Length: 222
Ligand SMILES: *Cc1c(COP(=O)(O)O)cnc(C)c1O
Image 1 (cartoon, rainbow, N blue to C red):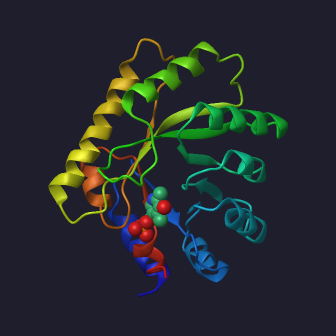
Image 2 (cartoon, rainbow, N blue to C red):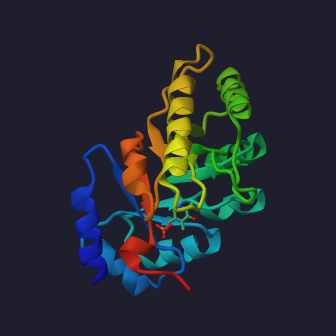
């Protein structure tokens, strides 16, 4: 099936409250342009260099989301244009994003990545670390004027066990709800980024507001 048909099928199946990030990592510009011409305006990449090259080559009304793990020393390469950074997992990184956003006269939206999987390899914060970061940013909001924490992101364990995945997504949703009730935070988290090609329907049932879908749109990656 073609990219545009895949895209339109998925889009029509999503509730209107759920935002689709088309994950185009490793895919060439013509593939992205096919999705663009079918109306897609939000693309997700996991490498800063690759995202910057695609940003330069593509139309400028696209929102670029960084969905991969971010190294502090590379933030400067995306700070001029990135719309949302999904994988923020430390104060050090938030500090650098704020600094680079300031240099570019921008406010950059960020999601804090929460660790929900049973795998060792997934990045992210636990609930206590998360609450600590939110408290710190709230207390120092005069300094962190150029970032906005708008939500949370998480990845479930890579498994066929639907119960396991559902448990992890439900856990993330409950953290999201609790953080929104904290008296210490003066902002609302609106975005809950969870769900990929294999598990997005389940993620939506569990309260996702943003799904990151790659292979079901663009085909498998090598
Ligand atoms: C690659 C990637 C996706 C998309 O994965 P698919 O299974 O191809 O849909 C989503 N989120 C993150 C963080 C990714 O790295």
